[in-house]
Image (cartoon, rainbow, N blue to C red; front, top):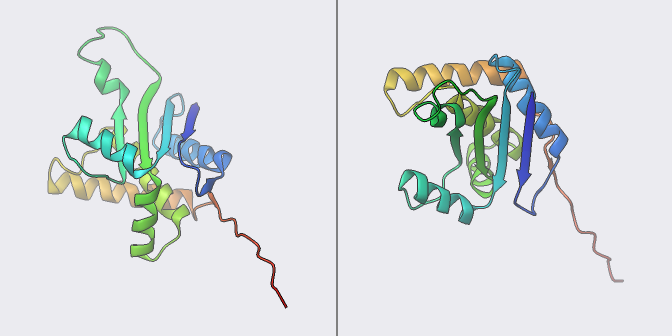
Length: 164
């Protein structure tokens, strides 16, 4: 399995290896050990642009998923790919949601990664209430299987000198 990570935000600093490891755990847990996954961490402006372009919604969102297999199916008779797709996460939106929910940004990013990955696997909470409940149950199962979120975010503090 291969996970490709592109971080397009400068702050906060993301521990890339830890995020890739979480993605590998989730891929393993959903039975996609042979799959490849692309993850992109972006700011609100890029996320809003993607949401407007692909979903016709002119606002930022927390996570978008772009399934590769689904996109190839009608055009590529007989062709297969190991690329499951792309998960794009807005770090500023994740931060706002984490604060609102009273949890750490690390946990929110892992939760959004799981949510996006399930979309790549065919889950769609917008299809029906029954499907939303099914997806939510699977998210909880996967988050329990992963355990506590590893430290993904490096919080750097600026030291200031005290003047006497």
